[in-house]
Amino acid sequence: MDFIDVEAVKTFAGAVALVVAITQVIKNYIPKVDPKYISLVLSFVVMFGILFIFSKDFTVAGIFLCVLNSLLVSGAAVGLFEYAIKPIQRITENNEDA
Image (tube, rainbow, N blue to C red; front, top):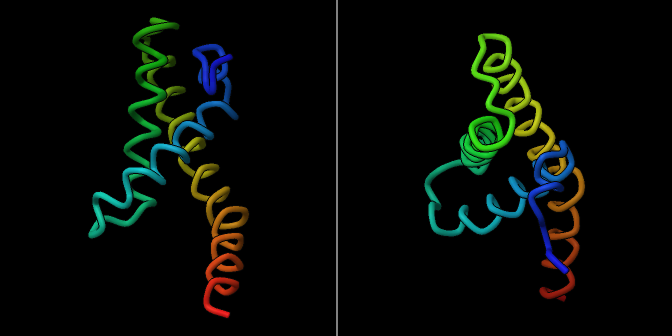
């Protein structure tokens, strides 16, 4: 059983999950960079990787859709972190302080 397989990454939710997971790991090693920018770069890497490896649609429309999808994946990843993960981290930190 794979944690994230190729078929899952090719979906929107899979790409968002991958970007969130990698961003959470990388942000600790690059403390001076805002995680939102790390997420943006990773979403471009993931989506263009999918374009080059799987779909191979190098037309203007294909590249434009890849850029648009990258922005959507980045926005969804940042939103997921801000509204789902960050509140849980705050609760956990408050419980540790008490």
